[in-house]
Amino acid sequence: MANTYEAIRTVTVGSGGTADIEFTNIPATYTDILVKYSLRGSDAANYINNRISFNNSTSNYTSKLLYGDGSAADSENNSVTTAVDFSAYSTGTSATGSTFSSGEAYIPNYAGSNNKSVSVDHITENNATAAIAALTAGLWSDSAAITSLKITPGSGTFAQYSTATLYGIKNS
Image (cartoon, rainbow, N blue to C red; front, top):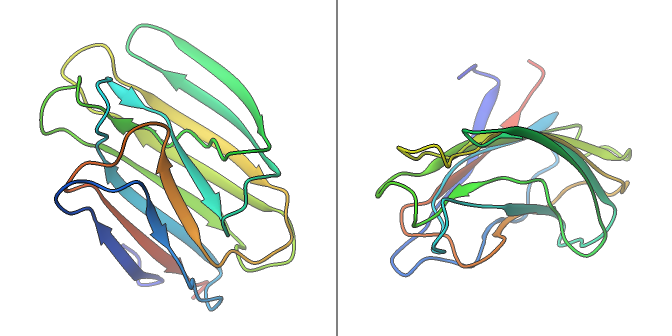
């Protein structure tokens, strides 16, 4: 990784799983932030649609999702007022054993006073056609600086060994 990336914090899910992965007290000393994740969910599904939220807010999120699942491609527009849906997918228990999804969410100008854009790139793993590759462009229409970021499974919990690392990115 470029020397302008600095790992702020890593979360690794322990035995028994967890309901969410959260980064709090994000310092405002960087230009942008990036979270890289490797996730597996506890639900019996090939993939699980997760949510990313900022500052525990449950409003003012919109997104455009482009995805393919091994047999078809599609897109969705999301305008969510009670939950964040940036579609950060995780592999479920019906997928090939011991496989995890991988992805990243990039948030430029996270500490500024303008609305916050986010781009998410992710893929689930499965030795079958039921897997997802997706790109999401999102917007959080809020002027507050992002001081916390939470990834929550759409159902179930995150399985043991799921990980996420938050990076701060500087211009120089």
